[in-house]
Image (cartoon, rainbow, N blue to C red):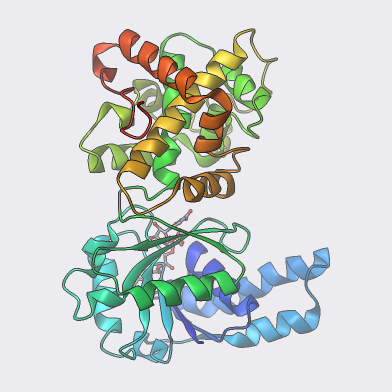
Length: 370
Ligand code: NAI
C-alpha cells in the first residue's frame, strides 16, 4: 500500500519515516520548495543517528530512503491508498488540500488529517467524499511515540476507519479510537494535570512541592516541569483553544498564573527559566499524597466526562495517557487505586470550597456518581 504525505515539516517527515520504515512506498510533498528539497537529507540525518546507535543497518537506511519519493505537485501523490496531511493548523488550508487531492485519488483512498485541535468533521465538510476523511493524530516525534489517536467523524465510512487503523497498526503504532471531540483524548484529559496544579499554585502552594508530590506518586515529570518542557506559551494556547471549544466550562479554566507566566517571558526550557526550570524539585511535602489524590481525582473526572460522551473506552483512555504523556497509570487505573468513594469525596470537597470562578469545575461525571 502506498502512503501519501502532504506537508514535510516536523510531523509530516516523521510520519513519512514511520511508514517508510514499515516498508511502504511513500510519496510526499510540501508547498515550500526548500522544504521539499531538504526532506531526503533531513530523513537521512535522522536515520544516520539510528545507524550510529546500532538500531538500523546502512542497507536498511538506504532502502528506507529509496521508499521516499518527494513530488512537486499534489497530483503526483495520486497512487496513494492513504494520504496523511500534516500542513499548517488552519482549517481553510487543510480543506483546500483535501479538496484538491480528492480530484486525483482513487475513490477508495483514505484522507487522514494529523490535526491536533481542529474538528475532523469540519475539515471534511464541503468535500465530494467526506466519508473518506478520518483523523490520525500522531504525537511528536512521530517515529518515537507509539500512540496514534484515530478519529472518525460522524460521516466517516467504516472501511476508511479500518484501512487507517490497519495500516497504522502495521507500522508498529498503538491506535486508540476516539470521538471527534475537542482535544480528542490526550490533549483534553491532560488538562487537569496542569490546571489543578495551577489552582494549587494560586492557593499559595509551591510549584516545586507540587511537582515533587506527583513524582513521589510515580509521575516522571511534575505538572510544572512538564509545562516548562512543552513551553508555557504552547500550554496556554492549547488550554485557551480547549476552553473556547468547550464553551469556557470551569473544568477548562485558563488560570491567571499561567497567563502571567507567559507575560513574564519565563516560559520554560526554551527561555532558560520557567515555573520550576532549571531548579531540581525539593523533597516531597508532608501532604504529597493529598496533592496527588487531588490531581488524580480531577484527571479521573475529566476522563469520565469524556467517556460519558461516547466514541471511546476506559481502557483506550488509560492507554492513550500512558503512551501519550508517559503517565505511570491511566485515569481509570488511578480511580480504581483510590476507590470511587474517595475520589467522589475529594471532588465534593473541592466543589464546596471552590472560588466563584471555579464553581461547578468539580461536579462529577455521570459515570462516576453512584
Ligand atoms: P510545520 O510547520 O513543521 O510543518 C508544516 C508544513 O506544511 C510546512 O513545511 C509547510 O511548508 C507545509 N505546508 C503549509 N501549507 C501547505 C499546503 N497548502 N500544501 C502543502 N504543504 C503545506 O508543522 P508541524 O509541527 O509539522 O505540524 C503539522 C500539523 O501536525 C499541524 O496540523 C499540527 O497541528 C499537527 N501536529 C503537530 C504536532 C507537533 O507537536 N508539532 C503534534 C501533533 C499534530
